[in-house]
Length: 126
Image (cartoon, rainbow, N blue to C red; front, side, top):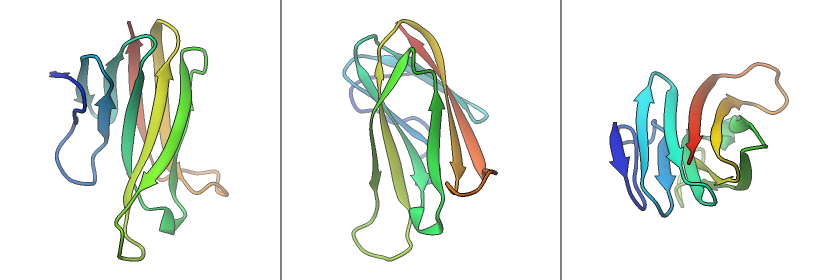
């Protein structure tokens, strides 16, 4: 388990692992086989970043408890050159109620019913 402050990254380095960023307080994170635990502070935002390549039609779709969390922004950051290259899809969430919530990300094409992969995040809001 790692204690993170300010802008911090969780997971191995490289583009194929999720990155968690917390603002502005400390949080605890750990990787547990596709399930990630994030400690967030009530009234603050946090970001989750997933590797993505929208040129394939796939994108991450977050499914989450709207009673505890609010999705504030979704962006994509990719290379400035190199058609067809992947990047990172970033999601900014606001912790609006104390307790536990889960975010399930599915990587899928919007017009298909099946998904390619999924990631789970347990959010503990203090």
